[in-house]
Length: 401
Image 1: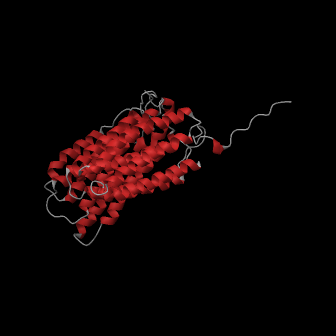
Image 2: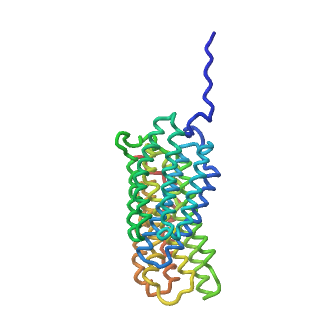
């Protein structure tokens, strides 16, 4: 009598790992998860303009980097695990609650609510590891990957919690140290004595899902700029100047979008798909997009400044925000372009040089003219992009190294 072929185990008994052949489109729950970050970015950009100085800028950067890391790691989880499985859906919703709690603590993160911000950050990352390790217990390689990541976040939890109990000045240093641990662990593939690093095969990503997620978050960052324009615009004062500021702010946002999507943004999925080492994009994309997002958030803070009633010259701190936002974006965009094409267009450093050149002069003008200067520089970069590609066949991504 022939032996019956055993039936595959029911799906509920399998580890919630993505099927390599399954489509990796973004789920509605992932889009819903992103809504938290609309509020978070708005609070960070609004807080940046309250008492402008380098210390306030460092605080904003730390808050942004921490929130960005909760988003980036969760995005990797949904790329490597099956987001349609109930276990992963519950994990995403739990992280969403935590990210929302961190967001509520942003205004007082360097004051009375420091422990709420840091404690929630630690619980998100350690809780994810404690959840995933038993969930994937039947997949030893995947379980060891989760264990490596958990150990690194356990190490960084120490300076996160210490920072929550010290003074504001020391808190910046402790939290910056904690973030350095988190980002370094990722960049080094989470090496752990006795376990080694996460194997390359477990760091490969799929073009369709990951590229779409990063593009979506950049759109969320632009949403912060749009939100600022819509909430700060008022005709109660200096009608002509305020209308001009409104138009300049919107045009600047449009240019940021255009420069981002031009070629590199469009070809990112193809570049990842054709690379022999997709993990190379995994190693760099979180950092280049963080810089671009930081540039957009800073630009939104500049919109907050120019849409207020202002008289006289532009203070140096205002110039740093109004011109620094587009400059940060161009730096990140240049690195992003190098990821895809292994070269950087002349318009990127050219735009940075132009922003640096006009910065001394705009301090003698009204803030709206500083914003106008930034917009014209971005317009020049966008025009240079369009001229370079006009009438030419689409440029292919650079071959893998």
